[in-house]
Image (cartoon, rainbow, N blue to C red):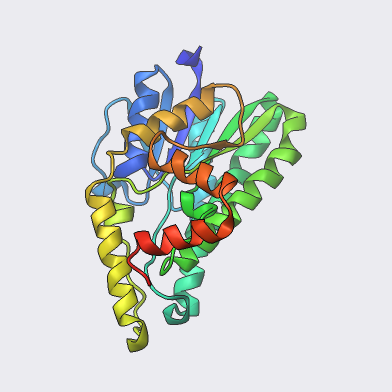
Length: 268
């Protein structure tokens, strides 16, 4: 079934995006993977790399048009490209917050707007937006990242209502910590406020420990492929911690969830 499918995956330089593009290619799909700089990108077997910066309107339009010129259709868009940020909300500058939303929210809006006319014309398609468990369960010192993922979740649900009349469906994939550059190397807010130092260090150590024991991106990639080709559901959580956290958030009272969350990050 997937042999004739044309798939775009944004942000395939490493981590979840790279693993996802590989999975689609092994399914026999025609896969296009976007990178910000082709000259610095590492080739990926079975994947045609496309230079695209999701923060730039013209770059996105050129990238999507290149795919259309090459493949004549787009069946699946996976919005994976994203950035992380670590720091207290009070420490995060307006420029840092804008940078976060520019990539993680407006980048998804740009690529979705660019592919939707083609999907509407062909009367079908899937858009898979990579969110996070922080899209439904905020974590301390990752407030702006959590806010961006909450925005992605709201936008995705709304978009699905609007485009299903054209045979297009939108889904979310919500991974937990994963061995990836995003989780391991997220920049810290530049401005540090000393009163947050102790708690920030505790949370930073907890994050590093979680990333160190986190699964490889393959599980998330498998979930994305299932979301693209399986029966439609709005939310998909990879097996393991993400599924557990989703159930805890849904079924447990807020107070014990809050207490458990603080304990897991070493907060009193």
